[in-house]
Image (cartoon, rainbow, N blue to C red):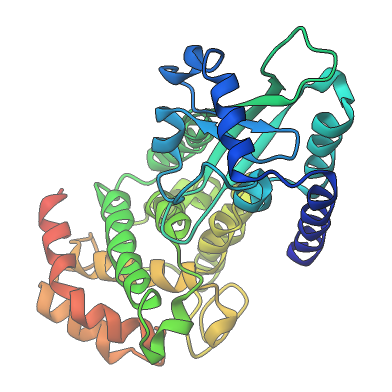
Length: 361
């Protein structure tokens, strides 16, 4: 898909060159002509930019400059040079048709998604319309952005938080366990992100861990045991050790959780629920996955989950100290846990103790 988009953008640039070459003096003239028209947008709370018929950006307001602060020198660039990868290829074609040939009455509305490794994805509603509404063939166009990222995220997560609350009613022995697992997972992932940003040999292994990954795991790690909502109460809250058949039923919570979270738009949710009990050496469950066959999000959460389980006092076990818990985890590097993750865990293990104490039951 990226290859197709790049080809399309190259074609757009070639077409734009054929339409008209605007020199510096002409740019200044256009800017002067719209100066009286862009005043309403200058102080608008909505990010606004103005493009000409060649899709060149000739004005940005303060809100736009703030929203896209990661881009340098927006003004003077071509719209799709900066924002092309944020749109679907069909939308790119429709926008060009709208501006160049007057499709849809010279107006367009749709959505875009801006994403970089260092920033969480931004979901934006985009509105394009002529700067001068009475023109039959407008030369300049307003592009208005509406960031609905938080609105969408809150709506989505509220639904799954309801499921999490329902699962907590089934398991009365969790306390702040899920909060701590979120925090452990986030802290470990933040460290992996730093490594992936470096020029170190290990960086390539963690390049896929970006700001979205951190944001998602810091919420979804808590959902790892949501499948227990389908586990019978007499098994889930049994005081003594489980029998073989009871363990078989208990293990089904991984599959149940994956089914429950299958509608979540990011695959990480399902991966964590399904695979957080797999082991690096292939002896875990439910599918005995081995090594990097286990999704990295699940490999991270299993470290967080086990550390907290070791620290917690249960009806069938005492609470272990931080040092003993860390030692036990390190001992299982290469068997239960990904060795490369354990190497990173060792450097930040003290932060796990701080988190445990901060969110103690």
